[in-house]
Image (cartoon, rainbow, N blue to C red; front, side, top):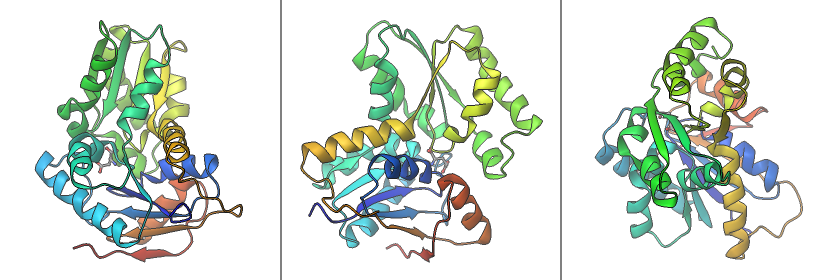
Length: 266
Ligand code: DGL
């Protein structure tokens, strides 16, 4: 079982930021990645729809005989993780808990800002997870729906993106946040711009690296780490494929994706 692949899913190719972080930490793991590009975005859809999509995504990965699944999508984690845990026995890891643990690993964190899709903010999943672990925290959730399209256009350094970021973030900065949680798969790509725009004492916590560390601990605890020494193989499956997704995927992965396969769910 330990030499079986890991399964990852996301609404699109943004979850490849999590794959990249996992490949750095666990280079021998084989990975099957499913991006539900035919039905993205998930961030603006209802909780019921996201639960249905997430269930179909999990069933696709189970058909590939994966040993564990990473929900590499903050919106899907926010809406569907508890349901998936109650339905399936395979280890399923989301991106919220690791991010929250990382945010609170700093004992002085008191005022936490969260930026994410509408769906993630409205679910209150981050707000609950933070408040449950530390009393007295002041938490501000800010939906930032324009960021995913801007990143997908590769407008990361564009003045329009900086203006949008400032409009979203200035109110959080005025409220005196000491920590900003980047609660969306795409946002690690914004880190250089965020460092430029935000006061230097605001700590940035992203879900990609924290999820990779959490996954490593879980696989070690369950004795599921791949014993092979060679580099793992990544297979990417998308429910819709266009040249744009191919380019975007290499951008998120920071290297060539290899051949992308078409996934049929259902
Ligand atoms: N993957 C989504 C998330 O992390 C962002 C893109 C979408 O809305 O589908 O919330």
